[in-house]
Length: 390
Image 1 (tube, rainbow, N blue to C red):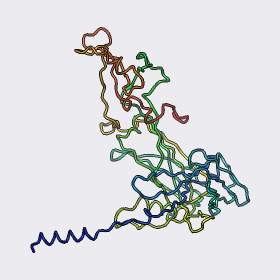
Image 2: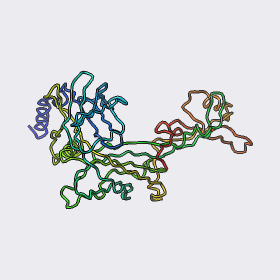
Image 3: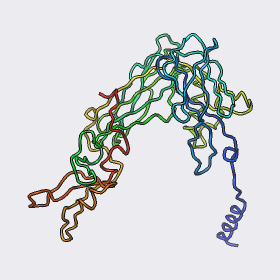
Image 4: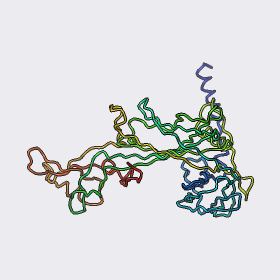
């Protein structure tokens, strides 16, 4: 047999020996409770998200909120503070203003009467955020946070953030159809300027435990690329800071390693994250999450487009391909009234922008128009200006 024949036989044997592998995470019918949140002992709201794990199956719905549960915060002096379900799977209480010298835990009773309980935890007093800043490099805005504890007590930190930005649609529409005619828009019908929002999705933690001083300097938060619409007009980020116990930090570090730093043979192998949550009804069933209690500090900054490089590489890229169409009152050659036929009837996917006049015409010849994606910013944001905006 020649070399090609040997290779063909070898490949045939390899293919014949191939067996499907169904990892336990896929085949297991278990659905475990996931608890996300912090007991905020200060004046801000305490919010917990409860959900269930889903099997790793293509097409499986990733959103699996735990609804209808009874959730309470309890102190070690037997006082309880109920949380109310504000939307599916989210439970909240405003301004608990708790005694920071006490210990607290979380109690959960599901709609199915299963009981979950966290360990009592000591309140961590979070030092203020010193500053939130940014550097500009590699065609991006790189945001960071600075903080320190003058008492040298904290050492372990976690941050999350909420981004808000003002943007506009590709084309501005100054006219609207009322179903009978094209009329000017009122200020209340503005769909050109909008506000967008996003929240952090990665785990952001830091530690000064190995340093002589409890100082965190320029800890990275996130990066916004130069062509992002977030930087088109004005961008704002609200950073929230949480002090952690060493056990809580170990939990978040483990989760970060398992979810964000795997993928090559040189990465750390996945392992179970330590938790202080327990299934009282079924003690052998794992619960995912870690309940901390702390005060929360925050700081907001704004970045305007005039603070950024005025270069072509810093121009925002619109997310859709947009073009303007011409709609004549009397289309050349055919005489078709495209304004009456295409723009006035409602509902309509084409939105008029401005009138236009053909060369030599003494009056408007029709209206320019474009699709909803290119004219109406409300499909990706809201026209309501946030109360904190300036």
